[in-house]
Length: 180
Length: 376
Image (cartoon, rainbow over all chains, first blue to last red; front, side, top):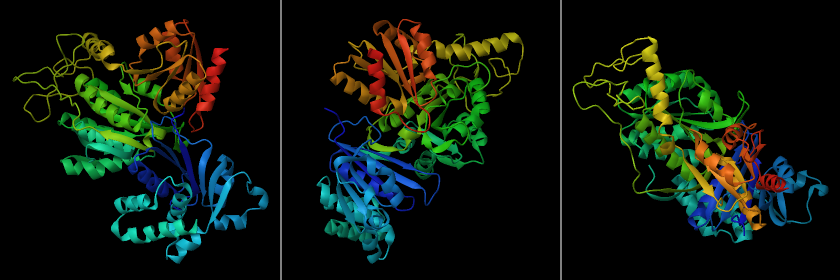
């Protein structure tokens, strides 16, 4: 039996909060008692380059560092979708920002994965700040995977975030949870 | 600082925490990816324990400040990546010559030059051994996890104090930038510098030709001369062949003689192995996964992980080469430590290199495939 149980890949564009979403999710999973390896990868640009956060989750020791094929893929930008869609395992869960589906052709969809469209940008904008789209996605991930509870994510936000940022991020988690 | 217990932190944060717990109270550095979180952590945490953080104008000044701080009595550290490590080499040579304890962290990234600055490598392992000028024996450690970023940083400080040398922590951008479990212990074992007690001292010499002299501090009242030029045991300049030979031989012998005390390996599943993988740092992670997968297929393979790169664990590798048929050396560079493995194996086992360049880690699939080829 291998140690690594669940692999998650969050992807998007620099500035979308991909790395911090990965940190929140990792912290929540870690607090729930799992072992976690969270890696980040980014371009040399501060904004607009590619951005990726990978999380290996297990109830035992983890030796791998990188996610190969992933059980869960979150894509928040079209370039990220195109780059990583083939990393999704057959039958895996793919959470996609709704705007991406409008941009890509039908041929770029995969029929052998559970593809879920989430209007993360729209929901985040409705809260007054598009930057929390990452949290909408995490809320959706919580609902769809049962890996981590919404409460677990909220607790990570409350612990790690500065007080004035907590409310909007918690609302974003809730909206994503409802939406999925 | 982190409380004792279980934390999810970056490798770089674990390094900073280990340094402070080992007694580091001075850090000087210049920003560079992927080492920045170490500086950031030291900048925020050192002042809270009465320490000093200095951002210098470049890496040359950073290592110079660290050497100065050490002579003023502080345990001192700097952190950088390949290009900055190159700039530091002249003063690292000065630290070998003046026998100045300090810790230098190189979070290796993909080069040469600016290369792929955000991506990991293990390309500086020879720079650690041969980067400075002159004759010296280097001590370089290689952590494979966030926990070892902490543990080996503590060890680096202890070795620096024990042998009065610069010690190199050869981390890599992969381990530096993962977040995983760190257990901060209640207490770490910390070694303090041996200092002279009487009114006289010989800061650069011992009766024993391979000894480590006691280290007086600036401002304690000793007549202290510190120079990178050839000197007598008292510190007085003297470039006669006799004194230079004595000095160079002693700073080499003090490390060579203690090789067994310093070298450190971890052996995984080697008891009954007829094949071995040798790896270190981040590369040892997918190597270990591959070894476990191969074992589940009935292949008798084990992993020898180098926690010290220098002094090279020659005896350990030599012993393995007598037990196994072939050794696969997995590293994130063009193939470097493989030459040391070949030298230690002396033809008794076939040695195969599995290099990787381009800023990416090996996958365990690639390593497993290479193990299967060895078997044929």
